[in-house]
Length: 490
Image 1 (tube, helix red, strand yellow):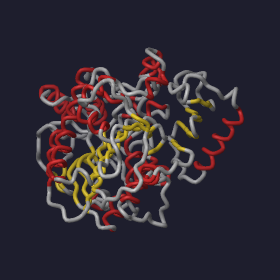
Image 2 (cartoon, helix red, strand yellow; image 1 turned 30 degrees about the horizontal axis):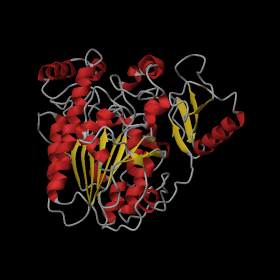
Image 3 (cartoon, helix red, strand yellow; image 1 turned 180 degrees about the horizontal axis):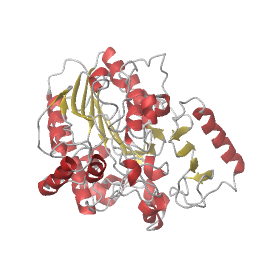
């Protein structure tokens, strides 16, 4: 995301919540896969996912780790999560071959903080750059090269590390993936770019190989897939980590082949003053549900290309593939039956589609309702890769390896979120939420309590009925918040 995000924000009700008022019961919609999704993967529509069970006793070498990160993809934007207008057969097949998580969360509701959470395994609020929500083009802060990262720790444990796609954790000359543990980088530094010209909101060309500009004016999603497929097809002599970070389906709303609209936006970005150019890239005057669907379907095809290359390499069985999104959906996204959207800590802003596949160790066709958050994935990757977290920078995530591989129960713990304007904490099915700007003046700056088991749309505030639960969750939130960096004065 760029500095335009503040301009784009609006109350959750006006953007996404209307969808949560329609349709069948919310609980059934959250829990069940759709017949359409099963048909897309070639399964019988009579087949349903089974509850997750580990398969203890299996053994395998340390896995390759492929982390695929979508940008602003909503919780229900994949057909395996209930979308009725977007067909995602490759991701549906990935889910059918692994585990689909229904209650997985991003570390934050905007992109830079979540990426910092993924790369460090820590709350974004522990890191100065994490206070930028998100990091803007003129920001001098970024992920400090001295901070241990997923890549640096795995590299020290013998992994080859690469990032392909969007970084958005700082800018040159001081910050880059190459300075933070990745051996290779091919991608963009900023939060958004036009898909063909590669211009960012500052009218700067933003596609780099390493730290040197690289000229390629083809459609960005396809370019990233091509690079990623080449990487997984190599004859690697060590296990590898690949962070594949798409900008899809982030604005501008450009599907592959729409070169006329791409050229129009690029010309506006080049010629308008900086503020107007940023708004032009945000594409407030364009986009549609059909274009958004085409973008997501194009990303799905690109992911299929990478997964096919992995299969041909002969290393599919020993590769852990994880698909996630950096935060909830934006203008054309579907999050039903949740409410809220990107930039809010309502469920639609932080709950994200999450798929895990590792054929050597995890059976397919499964669904898990265990809550997890981005930092848990970091802890999991480190454990599976045989890397130790740095004692100077303890993780805030909990490894899922015992749950996924050994059948251990996940101990109940608190999931915590904080932005400048909102606070949230989940414990079990209860969620505490408070927002300076919310869906109505009645709930603004009010401590609210929701039971997500019966009310995933967060409409029925239970704070008056369960004051002790509310007090406990609020106190827990404040204990964690006291450990984090304070926001600078606005």
